[in-house]
Image: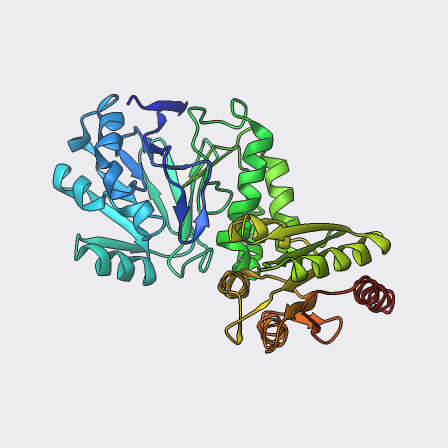
Length: 390
């Protein structure tokens, strides 16, 4: 439980949650970290505080380099409890600590969670001298809450980036030069898709606001710290913010007696025939948050469901709800499904896809009972024709 030095006088003092497997419905199969950073200067400063159950772990790391009661300042970049849960604990230990948060929303949200701990609101461009170092505050509202801000420290040129550039990724390695880098990129993409994606416009504005800064280290609130690979993660964020498509199409479905599954494969054949790379997700086996990471950059989405009790399958309804909240760009879509005597589900899927920035390629595709080879071939032909007409 020792602090980890990341720069002269700057330490990571956060916590590792190896067992976290769900975060707001987002499957975190690699766990996560709750990052906090300690700065030793004339004014001892803590950047963020960990989730409340991990407060003792953070305290032990702080105590390995300094008496925690000597903390003068806490910067709360974001009020969500995984960033701020230990604030009352720190306030109780460091009685005279001053807690800074974004003016308005940050102070309001922290007060709602923890009562009045004497918060000080800071506005865009305001600076705070710690002694040898200076902190400058940059609001980043809706990345991904109204209160979000980032903190920039000179002369080390460290950006404490809050939720931007983060990953739900538990590891003993703290830096991008030490960790499994491909896995870090995978988790950064999944994090953006499931947390930040709906706020791409605001994220773009935040990137613009930071564009003039020399950044030598990015310290996010979750996951590894970026040092050598800052240009790469910035380039990825710019492409995600720009809603750039790739040549993939995703096909999401559930099935009861394999009829809807057969239709999914007929749609797959159409995408393949048009030079696209389809990816199939059976909701019985695939988690919504993993699908969303691939859906983010796909140009096409197809969703299928059999009819169950006059409705689509609950798993499909769940996916559509999740997708509606996170889809960041316009996609072309297909809705399809099989039925016995009711047949309501394809139209319900169609309506569910129509609302989150999506445009139909075809009317809902419906087949009764077990589809024949001829019927499946017609689906493929019809979808190919629709794709070629784009």
